[in-house]
Length: 307
Image 1 (cartoon, rainbow, N blue to C red):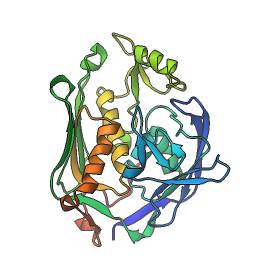
Image 2 (image 1 turned 30 degrees about the vertical axis):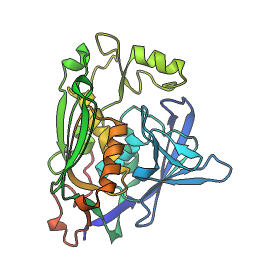
Image 3 (image 1 turned 90 degrees about the vertical axis):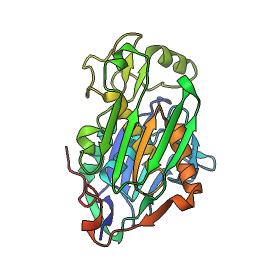
């Protein structure tokens, strides 16, 4: 049986929120089978649980925000991406503010935290959403066109293309494909950092956003070049970060996908729109388990390798 996974022990991290600039502590704790991933706002007078769900996404401006009534948690996508990449099904995330810490701007720190806590197999079958018919969402036309799509695939594969008119981005790879069966998430995707432009950062800060952002947790560019002293971690780090974000956004569904995801200029909003379209199209997917691990797609049977 392909089993669900949680952590062997708890682990903690302290950082700042990318947009709020607030100090925040998160504690990642093991959870029982079929719990899913649950954010818990422990800073409130009465702690509030916010389970992940496509329908719980309440805001997609600059990040993915989950809500449960009045309680919210912002910028969940990098932690969710790490959980997707390592195959974590059940997890409590205790958080002391309303934004997940940005740490180094990638998912690498979350991968390290999860792996340092250890991954434990649980006595319950891992449930997948298997796509059986294509699902697509589109917005805009011509220069503003963007789209995201899910196709049937025995495994999990993501391809993404970006289109930025910027010298520093144009010299890098703008399309990448990542397949869980042949690539290594921790090595190939997790270290890609979020990125932004100095002119946008100045505007966001004037509006009370990006207060915790800087060269230590983002790739920052002026009109011509990357300003970070160390340069890029990957030749195609920009588009790889979009894959990282997409993996986090899609994992908010609550179950791993068996599908080929492809996208052009998509973002948090369109990724969530795709999930909602998926839930509406009950004829286009099914829930599956694997009693025999050998029948599962390659890359899912074994806990993800370390670096």
